[in-house]
Length: 318
Image 1 (cartoon, rainbow, N blue to C red):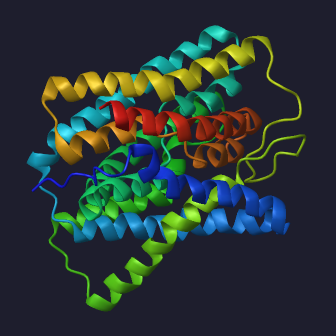
Image 2 (image 1 turned 180 degrees about the vertical axis):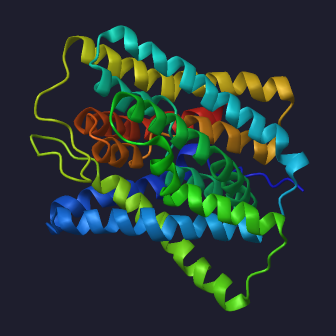
């Protein structure tokens, strides 16, 4: 049974509370002066504990009809494949190899915190379940593409990076438990549920806290606009990658939705997925693998702000 959003709410108003959390996170960072160590710890908590718990809990609780979800996953894979292919276009802007490898992931990686929050806001539990399936299946290939490109231009091992990625591990564990028919005891479900409830709110606050401007130094997990502005080829490359992520992918997804005949909640979830800004984990990955974290931080910050405008637009036009 398909559930339609409340017609009294426009897409922009429906998404306003989640974007308000992002803005609140940005404001709290400036007003409370908690320091980078606090936000670094919060990002690690969300990335390594809360978000994996949310993914695992969603996958193990939802009886996945893979046949029915097939068209949804095909459209989502098509959208990601579009970003992976078009992202190579940034090579024409004469970036250094490692800078290109770092920024390349911004063409197709997605912010799952925002995606789950938006899907839940529009469709409630069915929306969260559908987005959880998409996120669970799309996280491994997106991470593999990003890690492979960085490792190819650096000295890190692709398989070592993938083997210790908490999102991939949680996804694989959740899918395996689902296929095995594993039913966690109720206390464990409640425990995971509490962690999952905290994941979205704290994740969106962390996204907002990462939106920093000025001449701040790029730290281990800070997302800030570098003091030296982008110029010339670097500016053109950034604009190109933002256009790929926020414009080209949703356009391609609209075509795929019509082609496969996807409708209802699955169609909206596929479109929301394709229109999501890049995740902050892209910055963490670039920093950890010796890449150009500053440029990735700039792309994530600007892309997230622009996404507050483009995401409601795409949901409205569908």
